[in-house]
Amino acid sequence: MSSRGFFASLLLAGSSCIVAGCSEPPGPTGTNPEELYLHHCAKCHARAGEPGGPNLGGSKGPDLSHIGSATGMTVDWLTEYISNPQSKRPDVRVMPAFNTKMTPEQIKALAEWLAAKK
Image 1 (cartoon, rainbow, N blue to C red):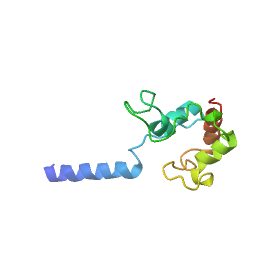
Image 2: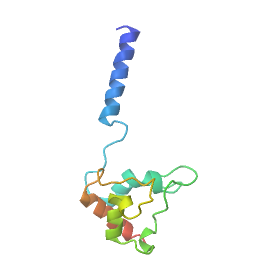
Image 3: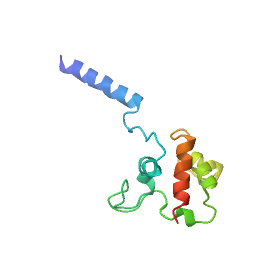
Image 4: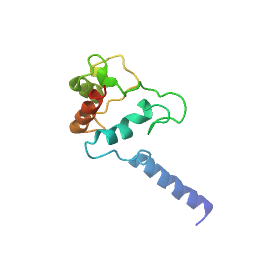
């Protein structure tokens, strides 16, 4: 195979991988809230040195380790917010909606887990 043919094959394989979503591993299929947090939340909310968090410095999102003690952070509120943040805070720009990335059962399990963090 010529180098031109090899490059074309490599480009086609890379393009297929991008289209198929190879850049992000599939999320958890169950409702284990810790697994859901690590997969969907930790990259923005974990603190330096915590699993899924940055090695140094801060994170993009607020610390959720005591979110359940904040005023109004009920399971229902968190469920709606995780599903579609703009439904609760129309000015939110960074937090993505997870209603297309997790099932309603997964979102509820994660919200219950977060609400219990006092």
